[in-house]
Image 1 (cartoon, one colour):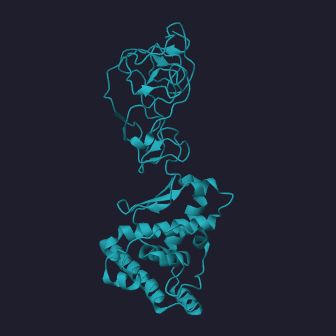
Image 2: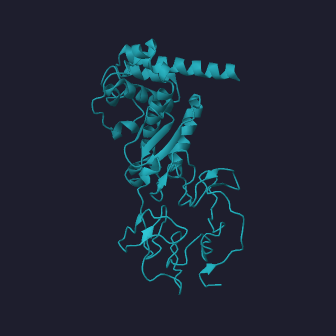
Image 3: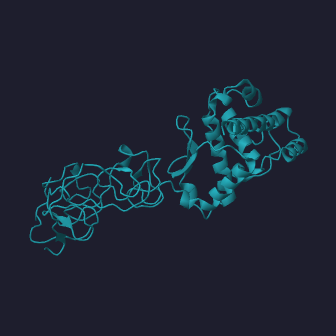
Length: 339
């Protein structure tokens, strides 16, 4: 037995993909963790292709390698090739080493098997997003990162804010529509084609020394308002919605994020017909801001309507809160009838 590699007894050849032995999830070869239960995976040489495995991690390697491409350990010995090869037996060629040694590498090797340096892959070609912990590719429905095993959604980075958000939604008894919050790079928002997926810009997590939890709660609640409306799009097209908020088919005109407004619990003095200045940008933003105020104020219509009167708001603002309140009541009634 070599110091860094171990031989295995012949075993029956399994299929290229397998299922997790803990939760039954279908797995792709060379994932490090199960995306559902987070179990650590080992891809050994069960089909006796190279008859060699890394002594440290147990994954399949080639006799020609100087480094394990999966854990980065030094496995060089007398069988290692002095010259980087393009494609040793049992492996595929997907490109050259990103660090310039000239050796061939196969996706998704994390280290070059010839020089041992870390490799980077264009994960956006294969996945819907990136893990907020390791910046490698993950899909929106993955609970665990398949590369580092951490929370692929990034919700562990927002726990105080999410606890507050869930508590408020429960207080107001907003029927659960199956929303899923993800921390991703880019702009916070919701894609109308995927209304249940709510993306929060990772910069807000990285700048935690500048951004307070109440501000994040407001931002998340605002985006949940978009998600709720996109999920109940028939309501957005109804006559009563248009009467209160306007036509959602109105063209967007470069709406920008107004961070300051997302922290406020009280309505602004102007404009007269909207709860905040940001709400006046578009009917979709108007509903999201109305939804945010309604939930953060726990749906207390008496308090909300009294504040509308004190701030000198127009009658249409009354109608917005009453329309939202009535629609939520209808959803709760339908849920009870289904039960």
